[in-house]
Each structure stands twice: as structure tokens, then as C-alpha cells.
Amino acid sequence: MKFLQEMMKKEKLVVILLMGLLLLIAAFPVKEKESLEALPEEEDTAKQLKEQENWQHQMEEHLEKVLRKVKGVGKTEVFLTCQGTEKNLVEKDEKDTVYTKDAKGNQTPYIASLEYPQVIGVVVVAEGGDNPVIIGNIQEAVQVLFQVEAHKIKVMKMN
Image (cartoon, rainbow, N blue to C red; front, top):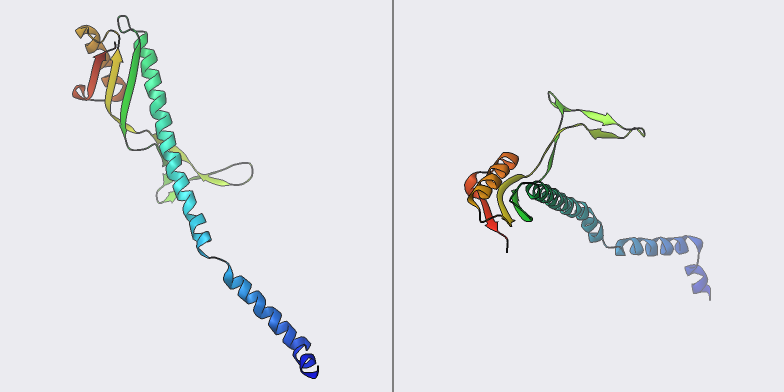
């Protein structure tokens, strides 16, 4: 009993509790924090890809709508091939970035312009795709809209 009473003195009890707490803290995994830090980069890349696909899809729809209105073209389907991603070009004052403040006081870089992906190829499938005049009109329209060379534009007849 006397031995047990000596072991249970307050100082020794506090030391034992602190050692137990230290062991608990040491048992927490550190790699979870590193994996959480990697997630925003993956989300950013996924977001950029989604924005590019969204922009590409919107441009395809706009071109389809325009071409359907042209006499002789008829129904159309368009596929664009793009290179690069959508980029925000930040305004800089000599060496420093220019920032804007919102109502809460948060600073965000001032976006001077937006650079879209470059269209490098276009396929157009149209009901009037067998008429050489219609093919020429479609190719000229795509060249004007997307600055794509004629040999990178393919117009085909829809069945």
C-alpha cells in the first residue's frame, strides 16, 4: 500500500498524464494535411478544364445557330478542337499588380483582359454540305470567326 501511495503522488500523476497526452498527439497522422493541401491544385485544374469545355461548347452552339440561318446550310453540328486554356490577364503597374477591393475589404487582382483558348480545328456537318458554294461559305465564316486556316476546316454532308 505504501508503494502505491508513493506512486500516486500528484507530481508523478501529472507527469504520467502529460506523457499520455504527448503520445496521443504523436499518434495523429501528418500526411492528411499534405493531401488536403494538394486538393486545391487538383480542383483548380479540374475547374480550368470545365471552363474550357464550357467555352468550347458555347462556341459550338453559337456557330451552329449562325450557320442554320444561312440559306442552303440546313441543320448543322459543329465540333471545335482547342489548344490552351482560358486565362485572365492581370493588370500591372510597372512591376506591381493592381488590385481592386470589394465591400468587405478583400483584394483581388484587376483583370485587364481575358484570353480564350485558341481554336485549331473545326468540323462542320451540315445538310447542305454537298454543295461546293455552301462549303465555301461555311469555311469562310469559320475562318473569319476563329482565325483558322482553310485546311483545318472540314465541312461534310449530314445524312
